[in-house]
Amino acid sequence: MGKIFCVVFLICSTAFGQRADFFREDITFRLDSIHLDVEGYYWFANHSDKQVNSNIFYPFPNYHGEEIDSIRLYNISAGQKTRYKLEGANGISFDLFIAPHDTVLFQIGYRQKLAGDSAVYILRTTQGWGKPLAHAEYKLIVHDTMKIKKFSYPPDKSYNIENEKIYYWEMNNFMPVKDMIFYF
Image (cartoon, rainbow, N blue to C red):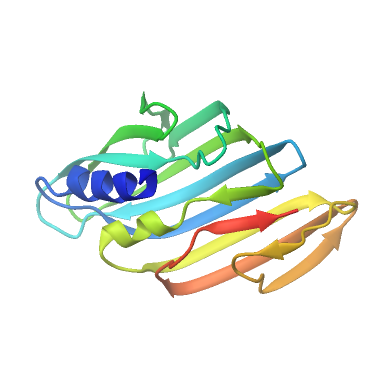
């Protein structure tokens, strides 16, 4: 039910006025057995002749009452932190302004305390934008002693650097049908 709320809220929040085009994301996950730290870069474009003024909802997974203990939101294009509103344990919302024929890049990060043997990053809200991501990259970094038992999406490749194992995914024209889940 919570996921449906996220998708509906996302659609409603962008339905008024001009709509931004969410077309790319690049996410790095750092996972230990206690926390999932997410740092993402998100690209939005305005292909119209009018400014886009929109409210964006960014969801957090909350399957087992897992707590988010820090949130970071930075508009890289404007070179400034962005204010956000905490929407309970479900996520944050923030305002998006894009000049005509311009692109905006946001950095969004959070750290979540895990309550089980898996970590989740919500991908399916991309469906609420009504089109696939043109390009998406994901990296999972774990200590090389940590065993990942299963992935919801098998990684394209993995490699070791010093004491870390890095899993890598690259998707083009990507419309997620499931969330990114790491089982450990």
